[in-house]
Length: 281
Image 1 (cartoon, rainbow, N blue to C red):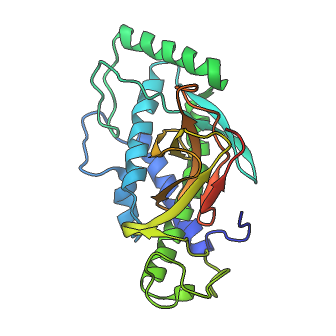
Image 2 (cartoon, rainbow, N blue to C red; image 1 turned 90 degrees about the horizontal axis):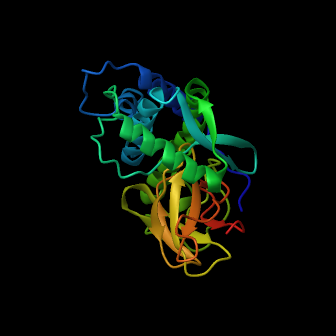
C-alpha cells in the first residue's frame, strides 16, 4: 500500500473550509426555508471547487435527516468505531430504514415524528447494537468530529480530481493523453508530488479500484469514511473491481451467511490505495 502521498496543503485548506461551512449549515436553516442545492454544493462553487461532489451532497443530506431525527431522541446519534493506519475514531452510522413516514428534505427542520416512528428507530438501534457495539454520542461532538473527517475526505476528492484532470490532459507524469492505462515506463510519483495514476479510469474523475478480501462470493459495498452509509460496489469477491471518485472509503461484504454485513474494513485512501486489501472479512 502506498504510504507517501497526501493531498497538498492548498487542497487540505479548501477542504477544511468547505467541510466547516457545510457542517455549520446543518443547524442554520429554519423549517420553512428550502434551497435548490445542498449547502455543500453551494459553498463548493463559492470556493472554486470543480471536483464532482454529487455523491457527497447525497450522503450529507442523509446525514442531515438523521441528525434531525436525533433531535427527537435525546440529541444523540449512533456511532461506530473505524480505523485507518493513522488513527481510530467514532463515526456516525446511517440507519438504512425503509420508513413508512414522510422524510423531509435534508436541509430543513423535520416536523415531529409520530410515536410509532420513534419506537421503530429504537428497535433498529437495538438490532445494530447487537452486532456493532453502537455508542450514542452527543450530536455536538458528532458534528465537531464530522468537520475533520469530512474535511479529510474532501481533501482527497479535490486533490485526486485535479490529478485525474492532469492525467486526462496529458500533464504531469501522465505523459501523453491519459487513456485509462498507465503509459509505458511510468511509475512512482509525478514531479509535482501528486498521487500515482491508477491502472484504469472512468469518465468524470473515476479511479479504478480493486477490493481484495479473504471471503469468496460476497457482494461488496462501500461507504464514505465520515458517515457509514453503504452502497453497492460489485460482486463477487475477490477481487471486485470498480471505479470510484477520490476520497476515503470503508468496505464491507454481504452474502448468504452474513446478510447484515461482515465486519467493516479499515479506511482506504483513494488515491493511492487502488489495490485495497483487507483481512477483516
